Image (tube, rainbow over all chains, first blue to last red; front, side, top):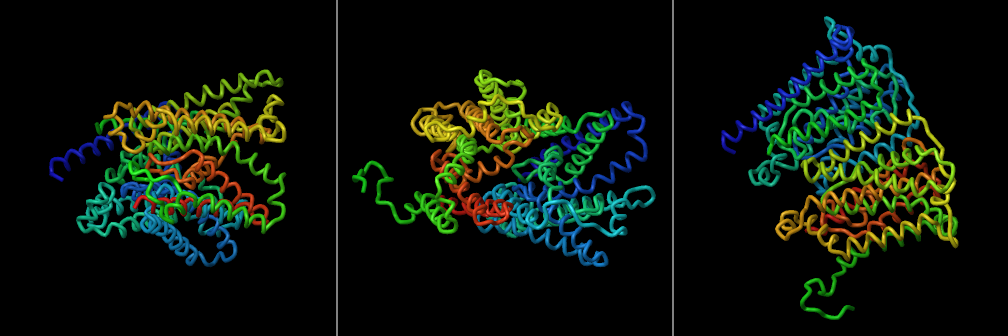
Length: 316
Length: 322
């Protein structure tokens, strides 16, 4: 790829980011005008507190989409992990130090299994993760049909903890996104995700360990789902086998809004981060002006179409 | 044994592998039914079989449509949401007499056609990936539906709708007859008509189709319209079966219809598939579901088995490409 082509690509991505950032400003101003409580510290703090779950699953989705796949098992995985965590912690509240790593390892393993299946069976990632999602969901429901379990107080506090008025979860989220961005841009393994997503055959011919990179992307997505599940369990205090049902599709929206192309190879985590902010802020604003959650669905669907429309028409 | 025809490269005597590929699903279905019959004497009772087929009919209708979309390299995730929305639309007439039923059908088909057109337009004209376009449509329909009903179930339906779903004429379920008519009609369209050939051309190679004077955009949009209309009709038949209209009528049918089509050998890469094989996929899925119930396993096990099957079936058919 020539330097100029690279430059144009980067510029286009910058424009995507600028559009989303501009929309964020518009939303913030509109929110401030529509309600005096929207731009208060308290609401902004609340908003940031909610970021981590959607942020983490969207980050995971970004890795997979950049690599040229899609992960539709995220929601079921998050549900299953909240059920595991809440029930484990109800049984042994003192073993938090064991439960959390276990959940993360299990999540990563499930992600890696998704990757392995796509690589070994050479089946489209949509089918593999859809099938996996069905398996996980069924297994979770067989174990527990209703929300249940509980978490120790100290663990629940993590979800609401603040340092100097800033939610700890938001700080963690920003740190993870920064790390992910650095890894994707600055390291060989990170950049290889883009190569595989851009042209898998070319990546193979260039001697990249394509299969390993695919598995890595899915494993990271699983790990991200694990982190999301930990914070979700801490916040809700129960394990709900259906809590993640909507998360799978919600994880796609910020990725697409942030300018990452579903075909793979183009985009980045900064866009996803802006996308997460935009979606969260928009939902919060719609709540403030009492738009029913039903219309929020309609708006979410329209956002996807408009975002894809903008990004594809500029590509032409 | 077919007579030797040197002009057709396909008429070489088929290897065991190809026979297995072509009739594998039939064999699989037969084995499943044998297992079911052995496992539970209830399975082969006419009442049970008719029951299984009655439940299968609406899904069959959706699968016909899904096949059209997958053939042109697409995917429709909005079918289930559309089914529920059409069901809610049917109650909007607040009808208590049967003479409104034709009107309900016309309205449902028109509404579905518009939805399908939008899906197809986004995919073909706006270059939105089928996944995202139909996903967005799914959420939008869901929002509109819930905004209308406020999330509460409704049950104002003409009594005749129940007959469409579970009634019988000369012992044959009405919805099964409807499915058969739809399958034959769309089977002729797909496998015997000019439009059908164009669909396969577009699915195999859109560029080549274009160079041959076929407008891929128009064919693709038409496939999405067909898919949505089939789903809308399926929704009306499922609605009558369920009786009351919840906002989630047809939930899971997007996955099930894709599972059935993939099991029936409809290639997700487009350009290869057969409506009747896809319907055979429905039969397999239904027998498995029934088997899980008859064996007394928890119903959630259906989800697990379905998940494994879709991955397995896709892997099985993929080997054909090599």
